Length: 192
Image (tube, rainbow, N blue to C red; front, top):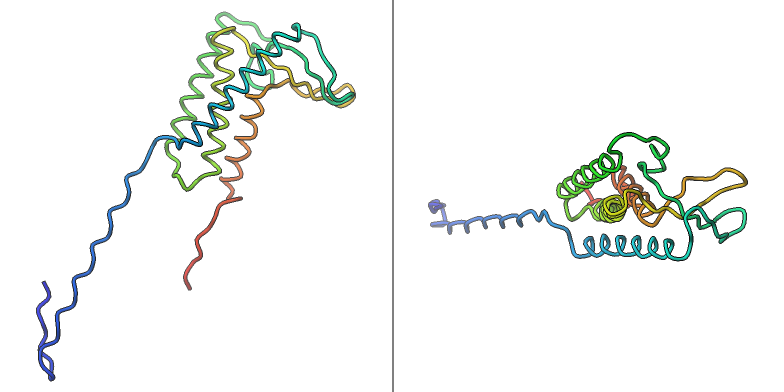
């Protein structure tokens, strides 16, 4: 309580009490519906395209889409991203690959919970990564391999075959990196 001060003109009125600051909204650690929707769309598109490839394109066969540049080629990837460890065989390889993918999925989800809702680009990127990782994990858990089918090449040089999930992971990683370096982030103006 403020005590009125005596002034030559009389008693000065008491200063109004300072308003108490509004409590900060509680931190929300769950995903926004748009992020959940993005993950669901990636998983659905990934699984649908893989099912179509399994039905219409026998394993190892190709169909030219853009001559000398893009084919659809049905391949199985028993390794990691970009075909790493695909040609390597070791005991319990499917179980090891599933475990690695599951740990990565949990780690990415844990990281996502640390982001604020204002970090939209990074959160969208992580939603794409999680959707893609889950799509590929479904393949690994159900079949022991991932179906890849997009074959981009130039002359005789081929990029690794990939799928919708891999594309989502790559785009998501680019968005997270762009957010980390500050591209696309809105900055508040600083008072002078």
